[in-house]
Amino acid sequence: MVLPSLCNADVVSREFVVLLHGLARSKSTMAKLGRSLSESGYGVLNLGYPSRVLTIEEISERYVPKAIKICRQNNAKKIHFVTHSMGGIIVRYYLKHHYMPELGRVVMLSPPNKGSEVVDKLKNNFLFKWLNGPAGQQLGTNSNSLPRQIGNVNFYLGVITGDRSINFLLSIIIPGPDDGKVSIESAKIEGMKDFIIIHSSHPFIMKNKNAIMQTIAFIKNGKFIRKSNN
Image (cartoon, rainbow, N blue to C red; front, top):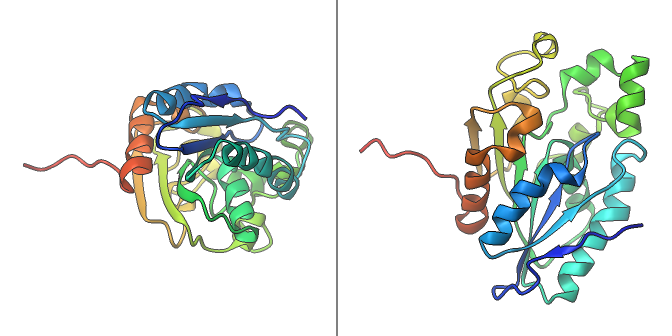
């Protein structure tokens, strides 16, 4: 197992951010966001994991503790999480089953918190199964899906989601406004502290300048930035 490397280890505040990428993606997709967080003074662990091979439960139990251990070895006072897509479900599962005294704030980018209708429609398709593996099968919207089974959140969460799609075929499947993979409504979850919609699509939201700015604002201040009417 390759452990995540710590970026910006000389962190005066002892605050660290663990990044988790989405399904069928890699940690490289979170690199730009990680650099911005590092430049803002946080220690950053960009966590890679085999999203197409393991279930969400297996990923959560095998990989998240490794990142937390590294933060603790660096005397972390707070450990925050920033996730993209399925990474948010991984964190939800972990925090449902484990207590973290150092837990700070969590930002989820386009999370399928109530599942995705795309999975409902395509989960039995051979190509979908091959591309997304066992974890992809767990992200439907019915009551038996993992996002629904985990329940509401009881940690300090901010959710950012997009309202633009570059996959119009998938958007036909999804009811209401969406980002091409997840509807705006499905990104929401009971217990979140703040929620904001930006003009971005699902595959690129983690690289969006506004998303990065909003992520850092929430980690620092516990709320997103909204323009004043004055």
